[in-house]
Length: 134
Image: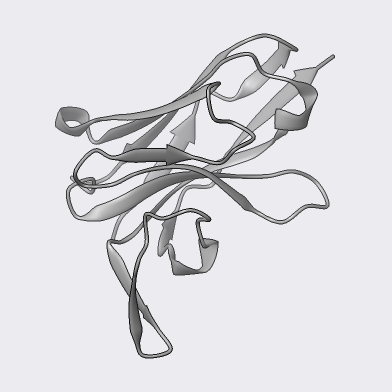
């Protein structure tokens, strides 16, 4: 069982920065696709960044160039550096771990692929709130 815990959320003004951290209970990163999701009130959960076992990363268009995902394998820790925040980034942020591949309709798919599908991620942290004021 993988346990994930996020931290680092908080309040900041537009243009500010925050660093989110996700700690895992075991060495997950070489076996899983790791990702950050967010969910704003009244909106669906959105996958915004992933990192795969080879260290490849990708980002949703609305955070590309502002957010950076990284990991520290020695400490079982995932990071999300968020810069130039704006009010539209206000949301609950979650880290998630999923199998590298999943099966659907008889076909095999890669989990670390945009757009990220929250349904195929098995493990989730409780989330950390990020609030950005104008």
